[in-house]
Image (tube, rainbow, N blue to C red; front, side):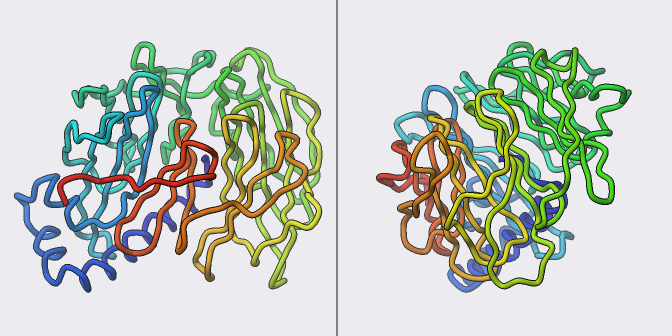
Length: 359
């Protein structure tokens, strides 16, 4: 899921603060002991961190989990990751920066550091690591290339050779910084939002990896400015930020399916509590999952009834679920305050607990 950089930072800080509050209560001083211990190991960090901050899944079913602890002020913080094989056995744990995001692909993972000053890390299925390359000039995107959430630039990672490149700029632009947001699908098609003005923006896409571009000028939704842009499994979806003072609103967005014509996304009867940000994901069969972050109360999660994505039903999730994310074709649910992570391999029909291991 690709969310705006401001929202990423707000959610990350909020999640770390919540973890601190919960685990000081349940673990006494152990959280603080680990936080301020310069010799603390990855296992020490994971033992007090609570729920994983991030999760990714590789093609063989291996799972990479990331963990973070912090004083809530950003002055003291630590991070770690743990790799589980397809059978749930711990392969390796290691320390990392506190803010990072794991991304999976067929034969491994890339761990994206929260600061552009530190290069990202490729993690193989056996737990061995190798620093990813520094960003290079833009080159056409290929199928399998992965957009990285770098805070300073729009860049992508190429698993086939470990290189990192700037995303090719759209149309008349000479730098990828012209994008407001970007998404890259599995086929290497690039989608982006550019040239935001008072009431309009441009939706651009390139089906040949950035060599040529198609552009459409669009008017803002009545709900506000473009927000979350995702492109996956034949579906491109752009949601809008709520700019009203209404307590409840209807979901709106723009959707493109199988490379067709963009159309308004206003499914009948689908409404959620007043939104600052709509969480979105796409299942492997092309059905959208919509959710509301739980900062104002219990989260709600909806799933499309068919790949047409025009009708939705409530998604079956475990009680006290606060977040749901798709990774590598699986769904993951964060449950309660105690570090419980559940996995579903059947689009939410059934859920099993992920054994973090060693704690």
